[in-house]
Length: 255
Image (cartoon, rainbow, N blue to C red; front, side, top):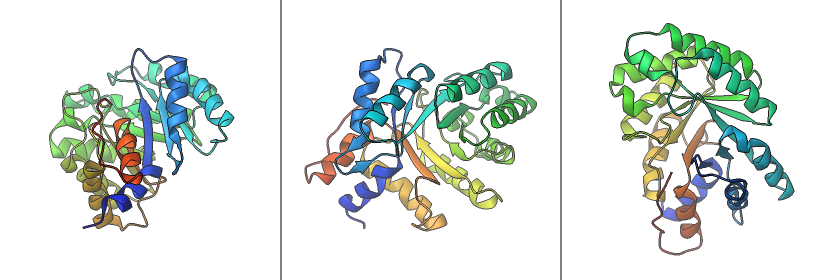
């Protein structure tokens, strides 16, 4: 079994350090950015609400951490069927300086048997975000059925998603190894150079190791890089740093 320090080192550059709380303030986001530029190296991105994109970019640049990308969420967290809203939010986020868009798929409409809404939103947001990384949040814990998860994944890939993302982290069931494996399989079966983002409930290095093993088994460890694989988390970073510091893993809470 791979030792925790090796796993922690692999995890660090894969983290989208996330704060998506209604009480977030500029000070909270500044602190998040300060955490992102760790003494062991940078995380992949910080993920914040659209209103904090500019502040996050400015803070990261001031820290000499321009390599850290700024991600934001649209159509979040509800996965609305309003395509105009999703497109508008995407354009505004990019205008504010976002590097990556995490778009919530209209999973409720999809569950009700309407695929056209999902296609419309994906097409409009893909066009609006041309040249930008587009991650599609499928809310796998709500879709539940493996066949539905796979169908949504295939649709997102067909419409140009750069990443398939498990969840918003705002539902009762977020990421699971089973759902992650479905998304990884969809990517492997597709002709697209896409990736997978595991989000929601990954708080410990031990949690992350399960998902790394899945990706390694299917694609090999060389594939598991920020361009193909991410963890959307806030708590995971503290545990990674604790392991790298040589201390006992620290239990932290929150998403």
